[in-house]
Length: 276
Image: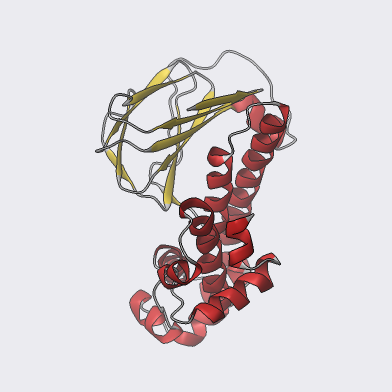
């Protein structure tokens, strides 16, 4: 599957016959995995990277065209290719065009980044929408911008939050808050009580609660609920599973609590979402 717009392109590789993709020069490649781990190599950095479903990579090599090679059985890789010029246009920036140093190469960042529930939903909708006409182009472009805004806001919260919170002047302590959030995103389906979370990252409950709110502007409980509901919305739209099944998968032992929270957040019941 491939879709293309002005300055961007989507690819969804879903077989062992398609194990590589060419990325044009002066472009970013956002790489997302499907259900299982995905092995990723590039022609300019041949070291294999493991990519899981709740993570994504941003890769680039501006001076020339390059390849991404995938390994998995079967391959399930989603790739958003975005021209650097288009990215700057989306962000409202002006860039100077000129010759790029042919010896320069970069990969940003070198490690996979976490996908929050909201980011996952935007990516799911981006690749799942099947309309090929003008409406499809507009819809996909809006989802690309939504994903970029969510990603940038996420990074901004972390960078600004460290400066504002008195408990986070120590880099070691700030890293504990970041790790706690990563656990909430990865393990949204688990109970993750605050006292247990604090113990996992090596801090106390008070510092964790206050530091988390300073950085992310939300309580730990509400953040966990958001992750559960966003992932629940993806499961409902993707698989057609029963509401009780999805509720259990995202960490609700009582389906009625899931239904109530879902309707409060999205203004629609899970059942109506399935039937829509």
